[in-house]
Amino acid sequence: MTIIAEPSLPTATVSRPGRRLRIIVNSVASDSHTWNLVYLPLLMEGMGHRVRNLGACVPDELLVAECRRQRPDLVVVSSVNGHGHVQGTRLIRQLCACDELRGVPVVIGGKLGVAGLGGDHYADGLMAAGFAAVFAGDADADVDDFSADVRSLSVQMAVGW
Image (cartoon, rainbow, N blue to C red; front, top):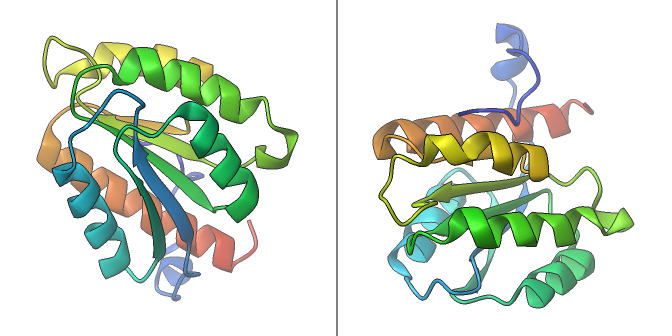
């Protein structure tokens, strides 16, 4: 599911280089998995962005404090342990409660429920809670959609949207 970008950008705009984004990546508070926290920063750094990896088992309060301090362009929350929908909802409510973080897109993806990857049924609730995008379906398609969203956000910021 892709929601970050405005409707498709004109081809001429897409061909312009985008702005280098400041991105914070982390997991939900109970998730100790780290392979995702190696892969995602490498993916985003490979796209030319600056990534601050807060690591695994990040307490909600620490993420909120770091976002207030660093003022990122994008926050990426990853879940491998299946608690993404519960802890992600709690986390996004705290981020949305901070006036200075309004307008910062926050996305979540991975294994959002304990039943497995097919967590698309959590997307509506997570979007209603405040996430800009939810990636919980086919892993390959999600990586492609996520990469396209990051590129689109970068271009939007470069042209002043």
